[in-house]
Length: 165
Image 1 (cartoon, one colour):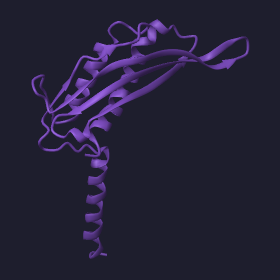
Image 2 (spheres, rainbow, N blue to C red; image 1 turned 90 degrees about the vertical axis):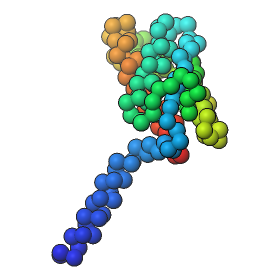
Image 3 (spheres, helix red, strand yellow; image 1 turned 60 degrees about the vertical axis):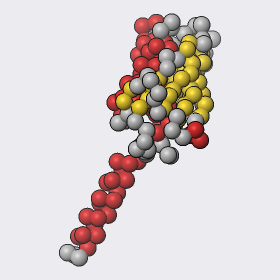
Image 4 (tube, rainbow, N blue to C red; image 1 turned 120 degrees about the vertical axis):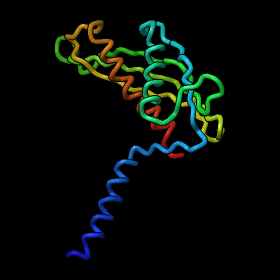
């Protein structure tokens, strides 16, 4: 049993360390700075400040969850794009021509430029949604819904940008 103990400790360390790296963040050592351009708002029905809120959410995500520093002058990587969709649609129809749920979906078109390795550049559209009960006043819950959607969108963008290097 004692002979097996080092094996189990080693196995535990390998498993534990791979849990940590499961997030998969692998930023090359030569990439040290990032810049997030203010995104445009291409959707007239979206709140007027949605693009600024999204840009700041993405900046905060990268600043808080990577070792990169923000730099507007010659950054190693750059993000830009636009809020390309903001749709509020009825879901879950029920009797009496009413709906039980509504869905808010936000789409963001993102350009990722890696100034240290152009083969890593990409342009993608990310979308995410939240449903809410149709008897809720949308205006009163809109900011929370947008924040929840932004958390997932920034997570997806972050993962696409910083995994698989």
